[in-house]
Structure formats: C-alpha cells, structure tokens
Length: 321
Image (cartoon, rainbow, N blue to C red; front, side):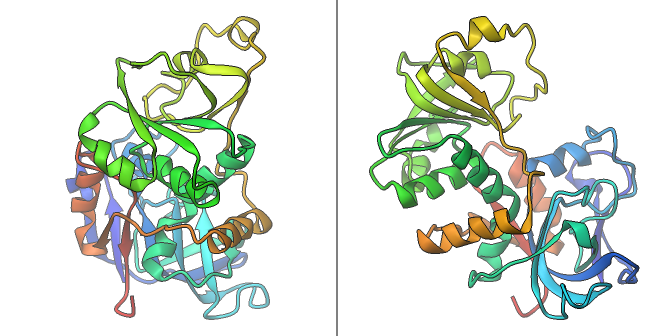
C-alpha cells in the first residue's frame, strides 16, 4: 500500500510517500480501507515537531473514513461496513490515516449511516464534529447574534454551514486578519466580516454568542464583546497559545456570561450519528474546498499552511472514488 511517513520534524518535504506492507489484523483492532481523510492543523503541528508525545517515524492523521477490510469484531464491524475514526490517539500514539489502509483500535472506530459521497464524507469527521459540538454547547436560538473568531478556518466555515442551514436568517459574523477573504466568507454563509488586528476586534459591536477558535490568545478580547447572559465556546487554539494566563473568573465572567468549550475527543456512536442525521435533515453543504490525492500530500500541507488557505481540504484514496 501507499503510505506517507514522517521520519523527522520539518517542512512539508518530510512527508515521504513510500510503499509499505498492509498492517496485519490483531485482537481488538480493525483494518480499514481508507477511502479519504481531511487534513488538519494539528497534523501540521505534529509534522513540525510541536507534539511532544509523538515520536517519529509516524504515519500522521487523526481522522479517516473508509470501509472495513477485516476486523477482530466481525459482528460490530462486518466487511464492507462504512466507518469513521476520530481522535483516540490515531496518528499520534500509533500510525494514522495517511495511507491506503490503516489499523484502528475498535474503541476508536464508529459505524455510520450516511449517503454522502467519499469526498464530502472525508470533509466531515473532525471538522464538523467539533463545530457541531460547539454549536450545541452554545445553545443557539434564532434571535442570536453570533461571532466566529477565525471564520476562514475549516472549523469556522463548518460552523457557519451548520448554523445557517437551520437558521437561514441568523446574524452570523466572522472575524478575520485579512479582509481579502471577505467575499469567500460571505459566500460561505457569513453575514459580514470584522477585521482583527493584534488580537483585538476592530469594532465596538457585541454578540450573544461567540465561537472562539483563536483560543486563549484572544479570549479576554472576546469576553469584552459578549453581552450579558452570553456564551463563549473556546474550542480552538489557532492563536498558538495553549493556556489562559492572569485570568480572574470573578472579574472576567462577572457580567453573567458563560465560558465553555467542546473537545472532539468527547465522542461516541450516538453523538456522531446525531451529527450525520443533522447534516441530512438540514441538507448541510459539506463539500471540501480542495481535493488532493495521497501523492499530493506535500502540496496539500503547503496549501493549508499558506495565506491562501480557505476551508476544508481532503485527500481521497483508491480508484473507486
């Protein structure tokens, strides 16, 4: 099979496409024919050597979609069953989905019912599940005015599509560091954009809900734009800061506001299928912005790191895609 191996930290050029034996089945694991996968910023961080728990060589990828090839639990995972793997140390503690086949622990594999094609399905798991979980925790109502910080990110746009599909008249605003992407964001479903400079929103506007994807680097500024009884979900760390420092909860949350989050590791069969049912019921447009093949993995990583990056990008495997 084709597999992409990282033997040392570095630029996209360290993503080496090689031929490797298909993994052998073992107790409590399932062999998946990987039909596709999305590329995530966390894999870029790992490739750059910024994930201390990850040792090289390693096949990256924290998510995948595919078909059961062989399983130690044939009753739960019959051959040909459509499956999704998300989180569970995939691509970190053991080899992930940057390959044509992957060996996945049964505990991290989920059967799903969906009619999405492989390209659309590959765009969904990590990105849309994160956005969907945050959307539920924000307890969104039709009257809300919502800000999405880092609206041009894949998760930000997934959130916009999920919300807009249920609430077509929602006032949904994206913050960006570059207004050159404004037209793309409006097309993606946002009502308007707000410029962000040096971690501060260039507006006095306030919101009832804020989806915070920049993270600890801008949470304090986001709280300054949150109305009383409002909710902020800090669900990303795109600002490169992992911890919230000098934070006095009584002072910062004293206006009767609420700070929550959503971790994509908070996943089970019911919750995951709930998301796919929502996508089906509200006809959510989940198609990726760009589609690559596994041979183009270096180009895909370079694009996601570039200023031109926009939305979700996926890689598809096998001829039948």
